[in-house]
Structure formats: structure tokens, C-alpha cells
Length: 335
Image 1 (cartoon, rainbow, N blue to C red):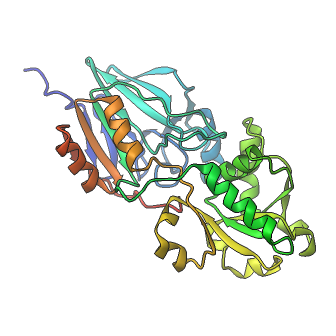
Image 2: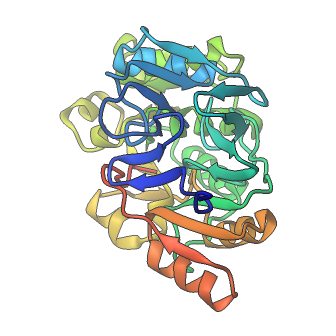
Image 3: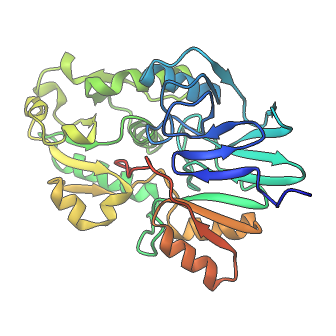
């Protein structure tokens, strides 16, 4: 008896299991063989017997989780053969450095697992590539119509105008340490800001890793190496958790800013005592999620990691087959 269509790919609570190859995509617990889309902690972890990912993601995982043994690099566009006759191809996702969608092919059927992705330009990573498939497994972090991210150029202008208006202060930008911080710095450079940018110590190693992979971040200095007056009129980047920490007392009357898609929600900005909310996201917004589903034009869409219900309803209203997945271990980060 022939196997049912797509019976070889099984969403489980702890990840997506590829049955013929007995391997997992982005598992939230240690497994013998993992295919990893990118380096954020809700998708990547240590402890796997073998980890298959892009070279950039493997470098990030080694830095963050001390994973080295069993690392198997796959370049963008490269196809590898897994056990059981499954082919896996890594395709740019546009989320952060090294991020990839994974195209899985078996018995003439094509499935894409997006991991996290965005559709906006990002000078720190290759852009998302829409790829035809039969089943499209998409994230839905910002899967509500209220989420419509503004052009990043507007947010950079807001930041630089606030900095210019207060030359005796600094602007302290909270940004997630992997991806968001480097993108903000690179976009400031693209906007013509050439002054030194100061870093919280927790940011240094990841920024250096980006530079080692060809991302130009300009002159970076550590806050710990500077005195207070030296940082007046400059931008300082720190993890979100340090915005209102005792660490910030060493800065010259900081204006607190935060770069996150969640800054669209005013209550989130108030909760963090953010004076300058910057709506900058490394995820697709509502319009980009729905446009991507239309472009990929899969026979079926599986929705996970966020506001699944709204996107599921949109698919139903547009006569597109869809289902919501219940994966554990996927948390909202300070995007």
C-alpha cells in the first residue's frame, strides 16, 4: 500500500521530525541529528549528535552554545542527501546572519520549513528567497493585521534626529544581541553615521563574529573602555535587559531607545520605560506573511511560532488550506 502524502514529515511538540531520515528540524531538545535554521536560542541549542546548518549559523552556535563536535556545514543553494532518500537544501531566509529556510524533498514532494524570516533589506544577511513547494511551514511571530513595520530608514532618522537634538546626552539602544544589534549598527552606517558606536560588553563577541563574516560595522568601542564625557553625543548599544540596569548609570544621561517589532505596541514601550521606541523587526509583518504565502502558493500552509489563529483564518478566507502547529519551546524574543 502506498504511503499517504507527506506522511514522512511529522510536526511533533519538540520539533519537526523527518521520518525516513530520522532527523529533526530546529528541535528544542537534544537529538542525534538536527537540521538548524538559524542561531537564535528558540531554534538552536547544544547537545545534538550532529548539527547541519550554514557555516555562519554553526559559528554562531559555537560562540553561544559551545557546539563544535558533529557540526556539518551546508552552503546556501547546496543540497545534501539525508538517509531514507530525503534531500535538504538551504535557502536564504533574510532573518539574521546565516539564517536559512530548509527545503526538504522526498518521493516527489517538496516541503519548506522557513524558520524565522523577513522580507526587508538587511545589510547583514542575504535576502529571503520565495521558493515553490507543496507544504509551506511558516512562522507567524507578527501574524496580526496591527503589525505593519515602517521603513527602517524612518526609524534611523528618528534615532539620529534625537541624538542631534541632545548633544550632551547619549542614546542607549536596546537591541537583541544576535542579529538586531548588528543590523541597527549596519543601518546607521548606511544612513551616513560614521561616528564611533559604543557597545555593552555582552555585544562585543557577536559583533566581531559578524565582522569576521564580512559585515562592516565601522568603528566600535566598548563602554568599559570609555569615560562618561567621551560618550556624550554618541549611540550606545546594549542588550534589552541592560536598558534600566545599574550598568547604564555610567552613561551620560542616556535617552533610552529600543529596537523591536514589539515597539508597535505602546504598552510594551511603557513597560520598559523606553523614551524612543524604534519599530525595527527581523520578522515578516502581517502584509509580508500573507504576501509570502501568496507568492509561494503551496498546496497547504502549516503555521507556527506566533499568532497562528489570525493567519490560519486569513488562509481560510482566501481558500488556502492551512493548519496551526503546536510546537513547544518557541518563545517571543526581544525582536
